[in-house]
Length: 143
Image 1: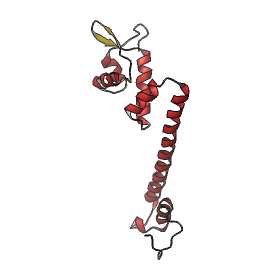
Image 2: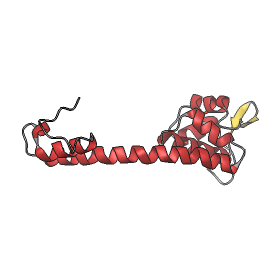
Image 3: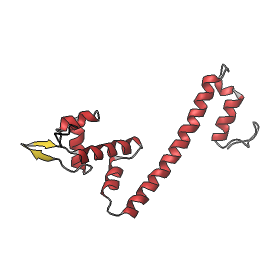
């Protein structure tokens, strides 16, 4: 943002984040962004709007829905906001563990020489462990 101009048009703000302008209008309508001041009938956005847009983008990337983001942005007490974020943090931790396990499987498969990787003993151990089958034997009924 230019130092001589403390505000920007909707297209400029949208372009900064590779968004369509209608996305910003939608976020305003949902209560995620405070309405921009209007100058000659056009929205003018400030640095505070840039901060809010970046916050929304990061929260979305972290898996939060727009409704969850609105709740976090609009909650009145710090304790309530912290509780909301702690729940989402726990969900993120679980997703990260799942992503990490998937990454390990993929890394093994990239190095695996087996024609049928589903028959690879190392791969099978990894999958069986993830599925909770590590203590079962081939002849044990799983039903």
